[in-house]
Length: 95
Image (cartoon, rainbow, N blue to C red; front, side, top):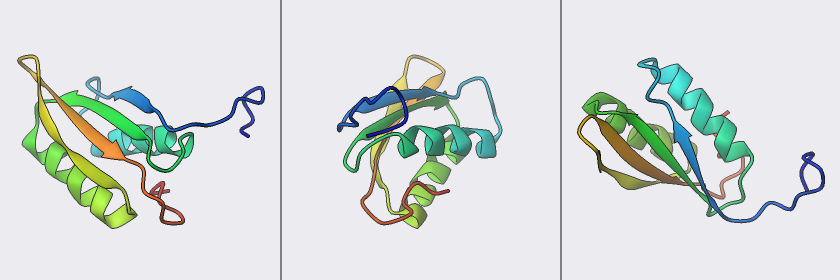
């Protein structure tokens, strides 16, 4: 159980929209925050500006932290949708 009124965490998909920043550390912080609230196997959907560097960084970060990068695809004309599955490795929140 979490500290949010007794709600039970379940596998789910959560959207993190970081189009408002070009700062990779801010994007990473928002993803880590979302992952901490999720059970292993849950998915974080990350919406970013269309930037190949950020997409590559997401994949590298997932590899380093024990999460699974499920891929990216264009979302509209200027954005990218990337999916990350939370890994089961201890400390796999990346924090």
